[in-house]
Length: 300
Image 1 (cartoon, rainbow, N blue to C red):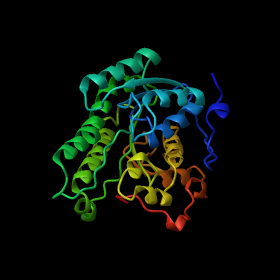
Image 2: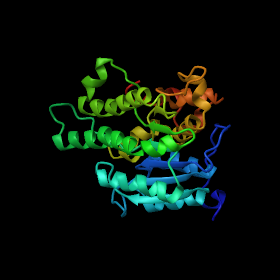
Image 3: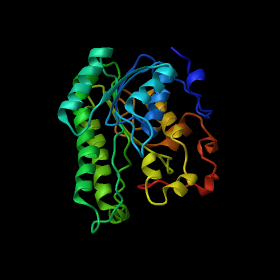
Image 4: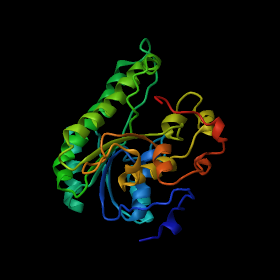
């Protein structure tokens, strides 16, 4: 196996991990690119097993990478990878991914609900096919992947479901700006809220993670004005480090856990988690803009 230093340069970030994901098995929806791939690479550097369920099996004209090229990066970074072409909207594909993860690696320790669709159109103009797409991927996909992985997670020593969704902020301005998208993302967050309570006695942590600032992703770049927007964004490595901190327990100092309980039902931001891990300077994560000029992400 090629070392990560030879095949993929390790980003110089201020996060210094105190825990490891070595030997843990992660099942992620999406992950061919962007934030999901960055999170998977960070876990792979620890020696984690990563199962990627993603739609992109062939090169796409507008999107960089496939599930297979992502898996190659994870192997090069030091992990074990299982790429699966599939759609989180399809029950059979998700069931196949869960079975494949258990069959290849013996179980599942972490589920990461990363797959998501975005359309910021207002109600008058949103296409109902796009509305259905967001509901099916964001809400139903998150619920389905979490649901089908539960038997395996219950057998893990420290199962965890981590969903990339925002805090449940009921300020009416967010629904008023992009109602269809807000419904879809808050559906993911409601899944975190409900599963955390439902599974509290099962030893499974359920949390959400969201960026405080805009993150450079293909979804942002493909939006109108996206190329200029990402100049005031951070790189996805900040979310990768934050996810690592949550999954290895560093974030427990900022969560809801009390003595004798698991740390579950939290809606973390990347900065909150990394500050708890000792990060005081976030400028290495930016893409060139001064901290004061970074664009805040929505829902915060």
